[in-house]
View 1: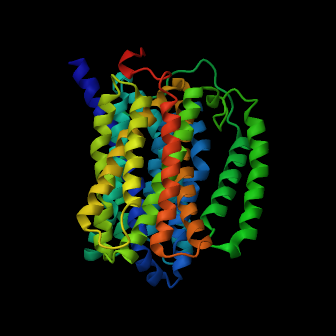
View 2: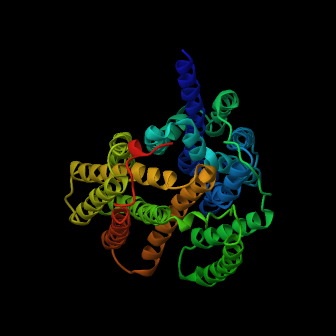
View 3: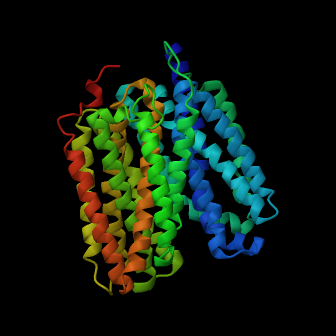
Length: 461
């Protein structure tokens, strides 16, 4: 009976985490769809409106590692619950915004709340699930994120068709309250530590400056006219990075987990993750252009044709998690990336005209199957390769790797479109070749972990 109660408590804790994960992911995709509506409402240009999305993602990127350190040193549970409160209140502030400045400030605060949650959700997942089934927990997280990403545009469209834009934010409030109440009662506490180091505020500031400057530079690049500003910001980011990394090398619990990079398996997993997200984002950002401009599909049909990718990832991820409980996760991830690379190559082979919707759907499905087969095993290796008291830092770095990879991928598409004078079909194919190259690199790094990874079922603890 005691075991049943414990299981129920864990399931409820998982529900609290998943509710907030859905909220934080949806708040990117639904707002993307609503940008034209918000531009009209606040009387601003499209380029300014994009900052409603950018400021949210920028704050998350800048704060994930500092907040992961807070979770490691003090409490994953408290960091998560604080994030839920901030995110929920900021959602109400967004709905009440009367001008562009108000919603921009509200979105920045919302980004702080989302960063609190994202910085510790993996650490909490590791504490909730027994190690032998940890992969299922990570797969469930990934499946929920993929589902929210795929469903975001549809949910936004449905809400905007029956209600005002305010409800895109107000809908978070009841779910935020429910997640807080469940989390406060059922989320686990940190393992006890023999000694606790002081929080490193200097490193936190350096981290914020480094990632802030880097992502402002990459996110704001739109062409050759931006090159002077780009190089200045990148130069400043590099200077801050040098001081930051040198400081972290001498700390026992560094904010930037340089101590974890001494673990070869972890380092390989981070590199693999960054390369995979670059490959994924390059393809996901570039493909709509060929569907719209070269093949003549409508915006609605284009969205539907892109859906099989995240849908296949969502279905395959939990299956991959169960598989690697008894099989080598590094090899499984490498096979997944090989399948993903095959899907990209099949995309490259598409002719300039005459491609049917079905011809696109099955190619998208191959990409999604490969990515689902890769992502969960790679995440499992990255998390289990680290000491449990450094799970916050490892999880924060995992989220940072995803954000860096996605930003670099989107930036590479922008650079290709700005630098090369070619047709849309040719530009998209350049992007797909670059994407395929990064996928192959990710596969090679993943396969190099073959002899280092032990199936989870054989690991004690």
